[in-house]
Length: 588
Figure 1 (cartoon, rainbow, N blue to C red):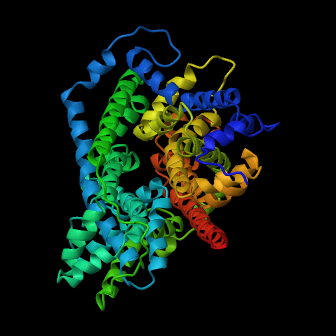
Figure 2 (figure 1 turned 180 degrees about the horizontal axis):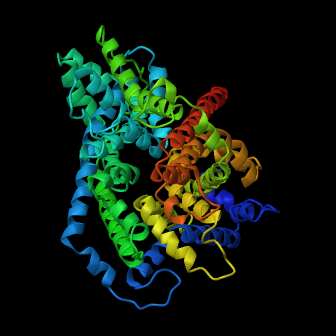
Figure 3 (figure 1 turned 180 degrees about the vertical axis):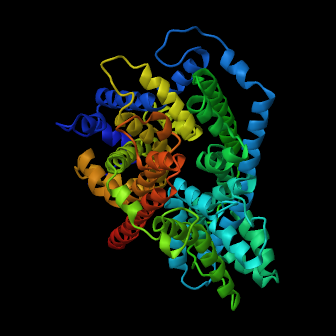
């Protein structure tokens, strides 16, 4: 009997036969030459998606003319951003992000604790309802809240005046509060998704010990639960803060009308709202925000370095929940209230606005179906639907395939160059959609003539893949970490090829995570506006761009119709995701 001692997966890969046919399969199936070729191909792909637009961002910040035009190199762009006005824009950006992150994190922690650690009724249903706002494109709810809380003709303010006879509006969405309020609606479910599983995985014996020693529920929650969740809370805080800095829709719809500027809207205005687009200024500002994002990511790494907060060990435990008694209906009501405010109200406004002739005039004689007829007869709308679905399907599939390969090399191998590949894949995490859009704007314009990407739908596809790669890598990394190396090694020792091992072992066990990542990426593409608004051209419009154009032209009623259709698509995909993945996981 032959016994193999300490034989690494890389050794097995080196001795495995090289498969014929597919070049990608051969590249990762064994020999050093094919492995090097495969790694180089992957580096070239990631380099084109990340390093190339970043380098062109630097080039554009030093070039005095728009892309494709002769000019000179200077520092005028950086001199232009070093003004008191831009300092106030930076303070605005950081202040708004911080103002939305603190309440969002507080509410998300409370909701995650309710769903994961208490006996609140219908927790499974509540979890689905709480996460639903994350899947709704922000442009939809921004437009809906623009109709709900408009200080003159908003439905909420009209009802308030009718009930109280007051002259002043109850809410004014075009304010700092309006910007922060809209950002919170997406930040809360986003943070909830990050934290709810961490709450579930924590050993409850520590909390039980605290309760047995006489501590109250609040003291236990504050001194035990929250402290043990510190790594997750810190990561979530930094992630939410970074996402707040790169926000675009909230500031565009509710900030600009009130004279509130942030970095992303300043970049957008410098290209789209000036008589002569100032590309050097926009690119210099984009490069500066990249530096800020890099500092924030480094700060997150420094905070958690060397700290250990292990709560899940080899010792078994029963994930019991806390009994709240009558208070469980209070927590239930809180979750339902969150769903009503973030989903039912804006969707209800879209439904209401789609059936009336004019926004703000809700009388019986104003009922009409002409907005549905106008939308369904609009060729630009149907072209946008085709573009969005094609970009979503192709983009999500390509992004997850790329993320799965990067995660496999980073986690499951010891190949040289894996750290470089992992770092390149994570680089877009520090590049907001608006910044990446500016980088690709320069990158595609500077490509040689035989490569006509600029102004086509493929420009959007490449930008979406770049933006989604960090999420894909994160999802697949977590899944690969849970799979024992023994499964893969046993498969290879018993004669299975690399392709057979990947398909029958890794893919079979990790594909639910792949499916979850695919859905997240698809919705990310469907809701993306900041990069799309810079890279689209006639013929390559997406639904988000069409909505933006209709809103800018004052067609709020047609916006409501398209918004409802997009909401139906969101609900359908979300239902398929939950049913399909749940059924698959139950068979594993």
